[in-house]
Length: 74
Image (cartoon, rainbow, N blue to C red; front, side):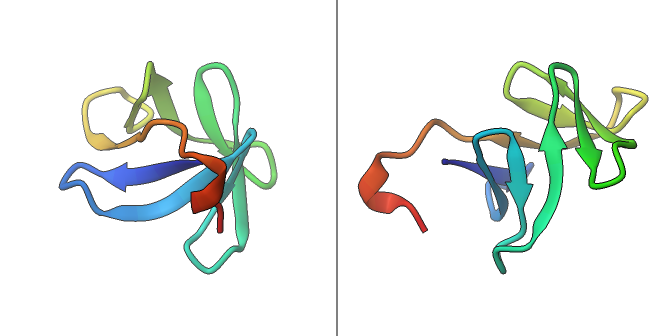
């Protein structure tokens, strides 16, 4: 599991495998090689490394934190 943090460092979601969830454990999207897509498969954000950006690549949304140890799993 990896936290999804905003540009201020506050967690607003998490990634388990390639599935993205809200903090209320609701599935909200998927991580592909270059994008975060919504449940319908539409690109929402662009991904560069661990960074998450707007589709035009200019506005930082946040970043994925490191893989968390299993004892911290929700």
